[in-house]
Image 1: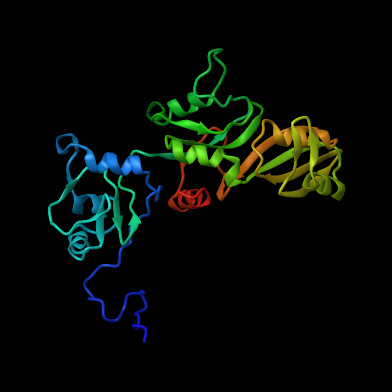
Image 2: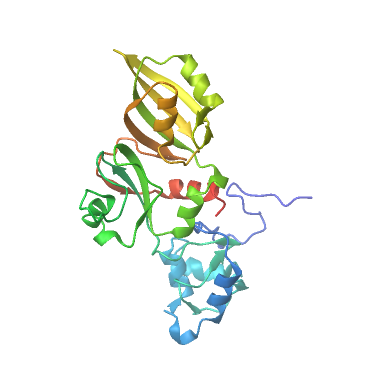
Length: 290
């Protein structure tokens, strides 16, 4: 017979003073063999030693007192080994911590931002020709950039959502075609579009580097010889939206990227930067298998 459970999901037989972990999942749940070995073999003298219960409290898992109970209950692992000794010290920048089997984010050095790139700004962190670039916007707002780089790029005349991070693994996966991360664009085009354009973009447009297909197309508005088209696709080729619409007979006059996966631009103004919230970040990591 199954053990009955209370409303919070814990068994009726579980001690009531044992905390049900609210641990914030780590941005990377999977660890390479090299990372694990490096964490285990790092000399104690080189570690920035912090008490484990303090690390758990700082990561938002629980209070220090409740974190001590989690440790005593054998629910906390460090580098794959269960820790039950109070006062254990770890290096949050290297050691791998799990609570109830789920990796907890204890390294706060990784940062994630959304920039609404204005038109005329180049997707580079610096520009040898002195042209306006993303690095100009980042450096004046985020402590000289914090080592950030942009995930993918938008051409200078395209506005909209650009992700900035110092997390190379996430960036690489978001750009890899294997994960089919969808992006949404709003394109103002010349010509009054009809359902024929929708069919053509979804069936595939022949370009000089192969067929390109949109995942979703919507005609938002048509007025005075122009149309506003919403295009969603997971293609990552250069100028892909502009080239598809031009080939279909609707040259782009203005283009804005409004969404990447579940991260949306919303009402964010051009030139402004905001941090990703936890739900957005977890959705990104889940999408690319981290």
